[in-house]
Image (cartoon, rainbow, N blue to C red):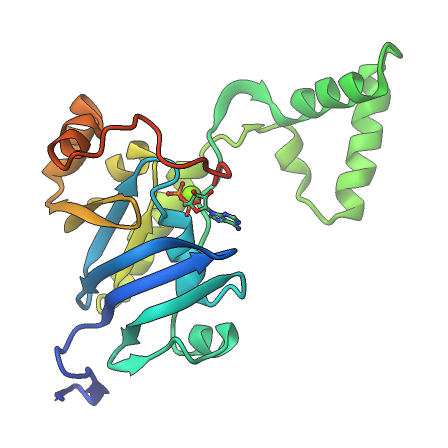
Length: 240
Ligand code: ADP
Ligand code: MG
């Protein structure tokens, strides 16, 4: 056990340590011996095909009741957080942020919604002006900033999330970041110290930022084939 700057770090001194984590969902084991150590101020990217278990890890770390930890430990500054409720994990400084969906430049959010409403209501044509009025009212009711209606669909989402990550990383230089993503794109904006590839519930390859470029040009196949994992898609995913 070490103490630096008055902070307890546990045996290894690492900020965040996942050891031999096994997680089951609805009786099926999804995470099968997941290990990861994130140091203070480090940015780790965790990548992997659909169904490799990325979302399962994120939910299990925050304590989602559907994700049952059957084995292993997760330590934040030495303290095993697995016995804690999600709000107590949050109070210790764990925070799960969601990445926004893919942007569609050129498709205005208002126009997109109008097309969706048209599709749902059928043949009845919708006057653009009347729709704008209806949309404005609904947005006001939901307290959504009116500017969202004129923006392109999800435009700037990845950029805004990336800027946010970079900003807090600069300001909180001891904070560790685990960026779980299947978008290579976000890694153009946030430079990770370490990159991990996940398959079948555990990390199968780790490297530096150069691994992102390798994955971009070669995909996951070479890594998976080397490991004897031949299927092109992993087990059926729920699209998360
Ligand atoms: P990824 O985020 O890497 O795509 P997931 O963690 O979403 O992977 O999924 C891993 C596996 O766990 C998949 O086979 C998926 O079907 C299963 N799974 C994940 N969440 C649930 C759930 N809530 N209910 C049932 N199966 C789930
Ligand atoms: Mg997912």
